[in-house]
Image (cartoon, rainbow, N blue to C red; front, side, top):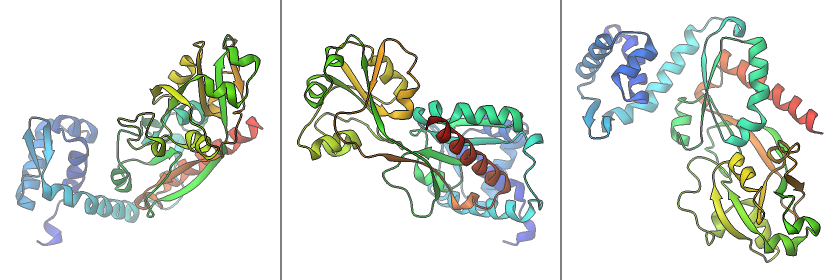
Length: 316
């Protein structure tokens, strides 16, 4: 097939179709009519000799050929974008770009409010689409479908670029009416019921039980090193929910200190350091190599690093 016969717009159509798996939604994102989108899909099928997307009980499902093309398609479009992108800095003040950021509610509670405040001043038309860690896989992030992942990670693909935004410790939250508030030590900590919060993202925590000690995370690993195990009575994936549960008389929540500090004005809660050593963790920002040289992306990364630095200074 000769390159001069390929309509580059069709590759853009295919990229969006494979991400959205819905003709109507894809048309809306691209700002074209649904008939135009359907016609584009027909031309793509003819050009590639494959149905690409087929209707199933679960909706529009990509074929094996389409899935194999997706990573190459992202690389091609990223390269084209880099070639045609104007020289100079990204004009954030006038941009209406949508940035997709995957983060946990820890990131939403600690970083995002300050980031949004800066955006309102410096780039009021930019839109953030904040995704949860379970929304996508590392593979999809690597393909550039998400601009950034901001979280704490046990592992990460070697191809990713990354930087540490800050380090955080752990704190305990419990009710002022909890008897352990009178004598908070390792013995009373272990005597209480505990709320476990998902330690990391990307689908972690599915079907977990108190016996899964290797999957429970940093707090339980630290306890295991000193020969103890806490009694977990509630599993949750949300720090805000965990803090609400901490108000119940018999429960203790051990969460990152920055998340715990958000509740310093709650008169119903006590915040204490854990009565055993829990190693600090790194809160990181990572992104696909496909986006490394994109000027808009570089601007966002610099802004987030600046916001993170100012947040860290404010908590000292």
